Image 1 (tube, rainbow, N blue to C red):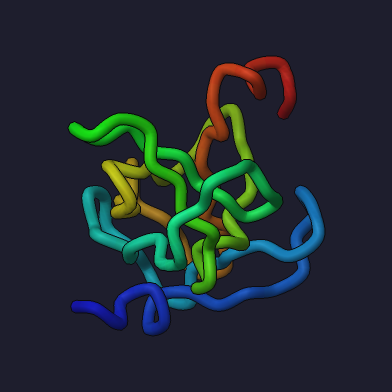
Image 2: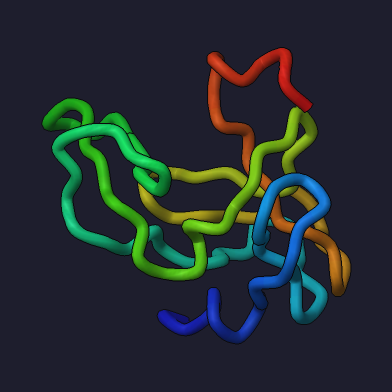
Length: 108
């Protein structure tokens, strides 16, 4: 289970931005794709994910493949804490995307 992000996905060039994370095999709705791993962050950066937890806002500087997730206004995955889950079935070769948040509402 811990290796799902490595088994299920591959990093390739993205038409959205730079590199992206793509499904290597069919991913079913509600599937756990992996955990955003990396050291705790104290300030914003290019691969920092901020999550509200019981202790307040916590950030991690991404060090695994999940740092290549790109933004979409119609995402197919979302984080629950630092764990990523599929919002719908994701096809082989499809880019795995998330919604970056309110500041990105008007950006496709």
